[in-house]
Length: 148
Image (cartoon, rainbow, N blue to C red; front, side, top):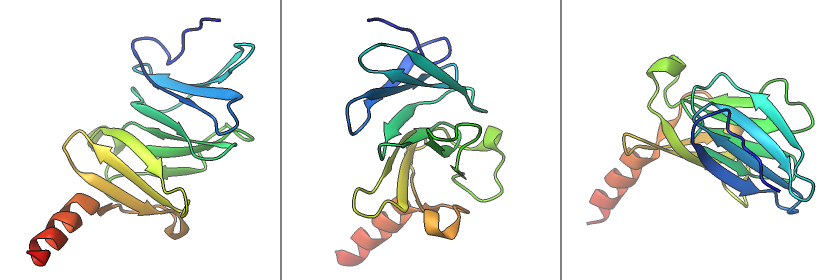
């Protein structure tokens, strides 16, 4: 089967669910799409983003997306993301650096990291409710300098 997705414009990311039964895709239109991997049926989820750069399954029911913010979506309730994480607390989404990729830690699923177009690496602890991201790139650079 063949199907569009991503909401118009370029399709920027595709990822298979852990069980291989679904695909998540997103792109320039800011639309998150869930596809049945065998039959090709598609469910489109509108987001507040103008562009989504990545979609990654992080559990059989959860998809992480990256754009102006990182959003965690639960396929059992797609009305709104279960978490929305901004690079800086209180920064409007329109002023945020574009987050190009996001990933959840496989052994510590409460930890989320994202890389931005500015070259910054951000991290969040979902147990703290998101809030302001720590700038992991700055901390890693400082730690490396201290080790020298």
